[in-house]
Length: 211
Image 1 (cartoon, rainbow, N blue to C red):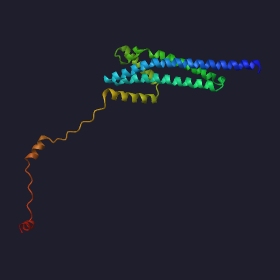
Image 2: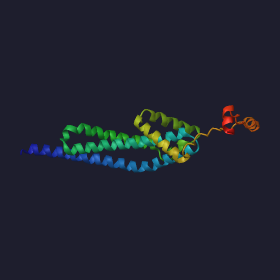
Image 3: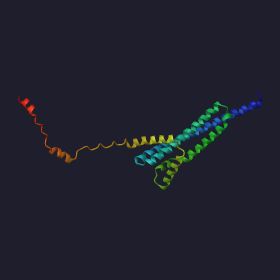
Image 4: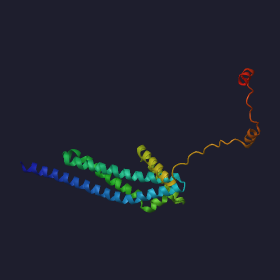
């Protein structure tokens, strides 16, 4: 094999290995964020439960929507990087090099977005705040989520909210049984009404009975 071909092949293999390593490092970072986010999502669930107990369903829903967005963002990005890593191992690297570069760029962008949006526990606590700053933050989060969370995610959030509401407040009370008691005047009228007498037997029946 000519030396030039060997060098080119070694270069492609080195590029592919470097891409796989970069993808792994990116996924490791995502997994680190997943562990950090678990602390926040647990707090967001606690906030939702607290808001439901206070009768504030709107803020409870916002906390769960924020939680769902963070979880789905990490899950989708992790899946994308895993698929790219698998492709790098199974096909010619040069054919998907652009896809890998794009995937790494998107992964970096997602990490930056999550880092900027998470903001720590203090930001989660703002979801139940009453100050002007907290209300402005809640409005900002709600508007941001409006364009980024899918209909399926919204449905899952509604289901989680209903389950939490049942857990916090218990099942909905049954409707009152209607009062079927008669008015007192009707009761008195029935009591005062004379008992009905049995009808007199007809003449023929009287004769038969007397025989």
